[in-house]
Image (cartoon, rainbow, N blue to C red; front, side, top):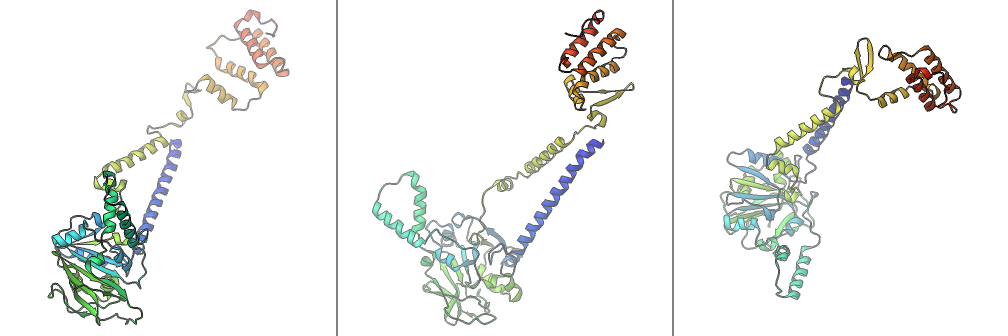
Length: 440
């Protein structure tokens, strides 16, 4: 039982060490994620002052309002209906200028055809960006190169293998979102911002009664410019618009040049709940897009396990591996120290169990018997164990055998162990010939 315990003890220690390692690793991850600084500013997954997690959780707690996050590509987003607001919270100016509006965009189609609402709030440049929508080069240059290529090729027929390239060409040839919406952004070159931010004057909106009288103070230095006639200026600083809204088909679009009012810090220090609800547009469902912050859902084994509910199979596999490791470390049957050592007790004698003659010989050789004493040791062992089970040797046989052993021990090269063994075996097998020469 002591041997079994000695095997289980390292296994238990390893299990404790592994559990401590996993607990420590999870604790470090929890602290890392809880700090919030791994996510960009104004992400709804960020919990520090410049995150927007408080806004997300506050809206989610309101009755009758469904709030979710989107982690899929905007061209693949689905289930946007007339009761949905898609909010791009904290989009950088560079990313806003790179956004395209292809004809097959599900977001634009949902706004135009189903009455959805699109809200884009710009991240001030004064706040450093950790993530931006990047292109391999300027998309305008790519579009011009593509148009030139199409002019050179003419109206050549396209096969089925070029459908993917065709989709990419249509996306590149699509106009920028700023061109479609007829709006642009510029930054103040020199300014002095008050400590509490600029005061925003209330303007007009698509639904004037819904726009609150008090608007949040502005931290951003961005201003809208080249605003088209379809836009309504809902808020402005002096004469420069900073909050605009317009109808687009059956839906609406709202843009702001700041996002600080949606941050955790602003909701604690100077909340503007009426303005935030106006941005939400009175819809019953709000989707915060996280792809603009670099959070994209990708495939994998764990995603498949969650989607198809393979949790039971996963846990069963872990249990099976654990049992397999346990079985390999120790026997499941009760053990015996004597049995494990190959010794069994009985009738006052000790014998080796479960071993062949070769194994016994190897065990004997491990006792470091000198080479010239090996044959005598074997003979002494035979004489001790033979007892009454074998015919005893006569006195003459004993003297002849001892003479052979003495000759072997004195001159092992002349009388080798094999020669001596053959002579001894012959003496024992033929008692009458024991007086013969001990030479083979």
